[in-house]
Length: 116
Image (cartoon, rainbow, N blue to C red; front, side, top):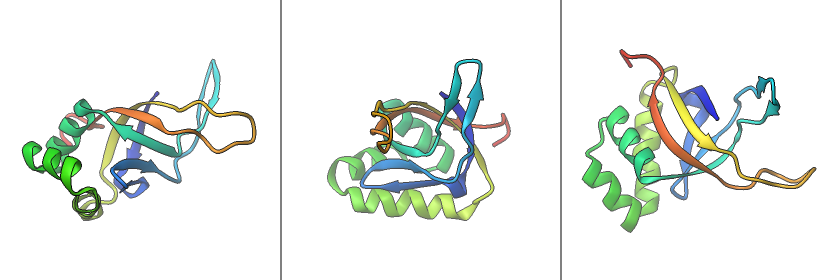
């Protein structure tokens, strides 16, 4: 799924992207819940580092060695501009009826507009 979300709807916890408070996507295929937990890929890390102006080598190091510091760094930069929008490319995790969504995969995070 591709969805535009504001920085205020994004949080990092335990090295994963948590999306909260975003409206469901309604398409020809049905309704897709956006809120959930997404594990970032290396490509997503590159986008996060670029858009938040965090050196990529530093982001990768703290992702590998100090996840609480990663969470604090990314969340601090997201709080700087809570209305800034990002496009999140992700795969939803599969789960059964009535169960919370399984962890998905954050494939990329890009600016929502060319100037962001």
